[in-house]
Amino acid sequence: MTLNLLFSAPEGRWASYRNVLPRACDAAGLDVNLSRDTAPGDVDYVVYAPNDTMSDFAPFTRAKAVLSLWAGVEKIISNETLTQPLTRMVDPGLREGMRDYIVGHVMRYHLGMDAHINNPDRLWVADAPPLARHRRVGILGLGELGAFCASALSELGFDVAGWSRREKTLTGVTTYAGEDGLREILSRSEILVLLLPSTPQTENLFSAEAFARLPRGARIINPGRGALIDDDALLAALAAGRVAHATLDVFRQEPLPRDHPFWSEPRITVTPHIASETRPETASEVIAQNIKRSEAGEPLLYLVDRSAGY
Image 1 (tube, rainbow, N blue to C red):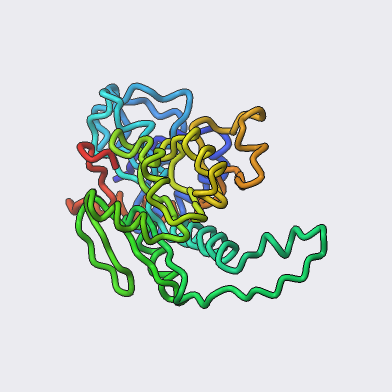
Image 2 (image 1 turned 90 degrees about the vertical axis):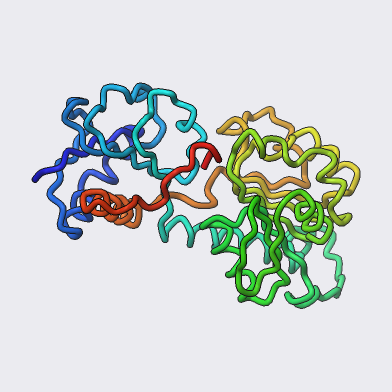
């Protein structure tokens, strides 16, 4: 039986998926018709990324699932017309891309690279950094991406701790949970990575109070969600020396407006939401695997818990 897949994503994504996704489905033993304009009543699965043309999921009465191409689902989860099962994207490309970004910036901070790369006064300061095992790194969020990155940093020798809402165990990583655990991990993290989802509970989690709990001179890396950080509180923490530097890849408004104070703050590095990108090849394999599971009556992978927001 041929399955009808509706590709509902920004137009620029179509060229990347129009051949790759059917090939992945064919390799999984699925006969699919991938289109951008299938009649709603004929759609079996919606392959989705936020776009301007899709807001009402009610007409898709036959659709068995909405399969998101993005890891974050905060832009769709509150849509009351979306009654179909919703999955988020977790694939090797996302995990590896996030690992590469985080390891790179942790190493940058750990080794003090900025002082050597930008040294106009030609200062000869022969202060060697500590070994990785003496550097405390914290990761907030131990989902698929957070756990993968925490393990990678641990394998490099860093003293890694991770925090999540619920108790988790991760080899080589000290884990914390709950409010007490959050306070504990903040107090120990010389380099802190934010990989939490955007939910009402995490918005402005990094307020003045949270920054005050960090060791003086801590570094922040945020490739998670822009709403995690109170922008004014971060600027105040930088001005006070509580935070020495922040690398930010995500923002409340993207692209970041050219007049935003983050651009002119020398202790902030702005990267243009490049920490991890959905790769069509690996994402298509995940989509095909989930469709195959659904057709076989098996549980969908990476099913979104709407009560939790991710």
